[in-house]
Amino acid sequence: MRITLHIKFIRVKKTIAIIGATEESGVEIVNRLLNSSWRLLLVSKDSEKLRHLIETLGDKSPSADVEAISCVLDSCWESDIIFVSVPFPEIPDAALKMKQVAVQKIVVLFSDYDLQSHLPNSRIVHVDLLTPDTIRIYGKDNSANKEIKDILISTGYHCSISEFPKCENSKRNNFL
Amino acid sequence: MHELLLNSLRDKINISDQEFETCKTLFSPKKLRKRQYLLQEGDVCRFTAFVEKGMLRTFSVDEKGNEPILQFAMEGWWSGDLYSFLTQEPSVYNIEAIENCELLMITKENWERLLKEVPVFERYFRILFQNNLIATQRRLMSSLSETAEEKYLKLVNEFPGCLQRVPQHMVAAFLGITPETLSRIRGQLAAKSN
View 1: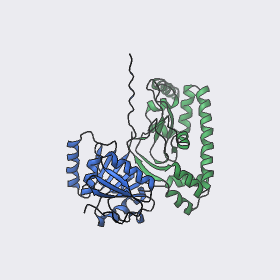
View 2: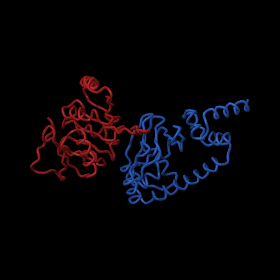
View 3: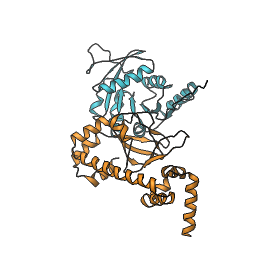
View 4: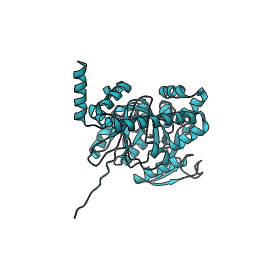
């Protein structure tokens, strides 16, 4: 009896940039995405912390496709989806750096900060961590919300999508 | 970032600054490193891409593992699987960056939106499609009737810059000949010119 095995090699590897990768929310999402089929580009102002993070990730998962990049612009230019986990005061500066190359890309923010006004042509998705494993997603772009929901569910989160603007009784949580 | 796109547009249509600003809001800039893939056989081609910098090849893989190349796309050219892009059916092609690339990508949905919001783009893409059809017919006739040497010389004359940037085995794959045949042709031509 002949058995034929067909293996599809995944050649198109989509890229996620995490801006503020060494912040608490950044580290959390990096660890969640580590063993996924995504290529991760990590950006942080703190190069020493970033170097240490990369080393730790390498020990945890040697085959993971993770790279540190010093430049916000370049990382967002190469990426298909951008996670922004910098502290509040640094969000406008990060938005300015990525503005030209974030056009029509999904940009995920771990707060309700009005990023859309800084990135008018990007597809903004807001994420609220309700419990360590439960996330509420909201934003104006339904297909972007769904795409991020699918990604986060694949990393083990329980996710729901809220109406935009977000519900009154939802907790604002920006990991700060 | 959009310089070559603007040149390409103004070469074929009259487009105002405001119309171009609208156009820019619908294209997503994407950097691709050498050997990264834009499209894989079996996936739906969700984007078509304008090449601002770099070069890509569109190819399929046959049963023997050969990789015949349908086309190269360099600066100022478009890359994508048109059939898959328009019908949203799975592609039979792969598209790989053979140099580091800077692309401007547009989804089918935004492409339809562009045609609606900036109607002059209908003319632009009509011209691109008709040029593509003519080039495809010429390539088909060349494939059916010309010798390997004639095909090679046509490529050298029409796209001289391309040969310096593309590995020889890929030139052979584009011409539909073996690398050994290409090497022989180049050697014979070099001997003739001496």
